[in-house]
Amino acid sequence: MQIVVFKVNEEQFAVEASKVQSINDMMEITKVPRSEKYIKGLINLRGTIISLLDINLLLDIDKGSESQENIIILNLEDEFVGVTVDQVDEVLEIEESLIEKIETDKNKSYITGVINFQDRIVTLIDIAKLIEK
Image: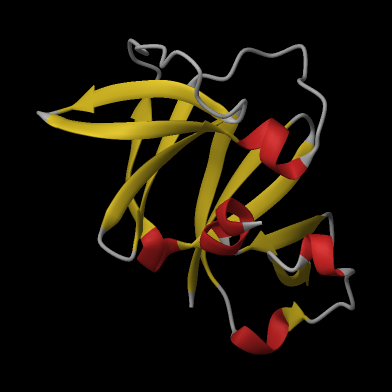
């Protein structure tokens, strides 16, 4: 299984690479009045209008001191959404057996598991479940 590892305020997360459409640099964001707080706005990616979500609010993580310079475009059931992250670290091929399932409360059902590398722990998340909550 391939994963894309990214950083949000010093914490590392990963999503399945099969759900990642592209990784882009920050671009102009058009604000949407009266939208949900976690919607940063809309972006125009090669003629396609995509909702841009604030992953910090979705994950309930404070904003770091670094500005978020990358956008990960995800394909969720034929709908594209973008999330802003501090940085995209790497794309890795991992064995599914490395993913440790963890018990989480109902509010964190978007956590698929954790991957315990020798030097760090990466939380694998399901963005579709994160947006549903």
